[in-house]
Length: 324
Image 1 (cartoon, rainbow, N blue to C red):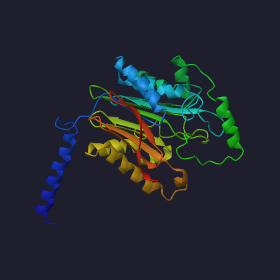
Image 2 (image 1 turned 135 degrees about the vertical axis):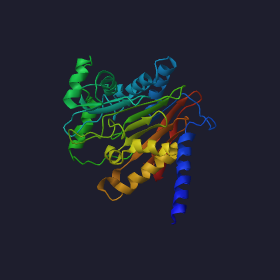
Image 3 (image 1 turned 90 degrees about the vertical axis):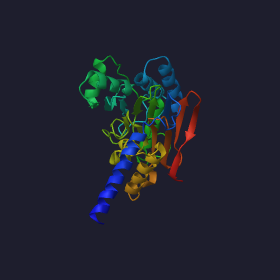
Image 4 (image 1 turned 45 degrees about the vertical axis):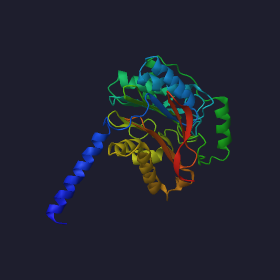
């Protein structure tokens, strides 16, 4: 390639790239309905409803996502989040969560035990400490200092399932059964400001001390208020290896739609993990929401769905997927 042709191509490429970034907020683009909330899995319907009520009551996007996902944390029948979550190999329920606001302020807790609402502890880490994440005993001590109640989170039903698992002790999570899942929620308000939250009890039967993607900013959750937000569900190790949610947002920054961005990262995960032992039971899904209010979900394998709530809709959406 001649020097002149190289310079010309570089110049044209720079124009294209800058145009993509500019078009994210171009007033000529179609603007989708806002406010809007999306969250992972069927328990997202109830969570969205509570978040929506908080938003409409003027409590703000951060409180809305916090209170929304607390619905799942408080429900002992949701076996992948909070109270009643399936335990680790020692029978301990350990929780991970993170929260993030329009200013890129964020807080997280990991390996937290005996505290039912890790998302609220994560918010206080953001608001009352100079840190982003507290973990283990330190996170627990902080929660107690902030007035949270210590309680046993292992319900009888989860204990029964754990004792049954111990008979064979075979670690092979079942795809799309919520024993290695989470609730992730993304919200865009009427000002087109974006907020997100993610909370989970992590992989059932994990080694004691394991932490997944859910409390890691950039893996389980990421947002940039100029671009959009993304959140993950599924096997956390695969999401961490690809910095999944941050990558979805960065691909949207280059002009991709939420669906295109989710697809790209799922394709990367597929390529990396296809020859790994966990491929047999691997499932990963992403939800994404851009600054214009456009949303999407996409997963590696069939079965992932997400909940949508806005002025016109309150429904579940079956996400597109790569592999049947």
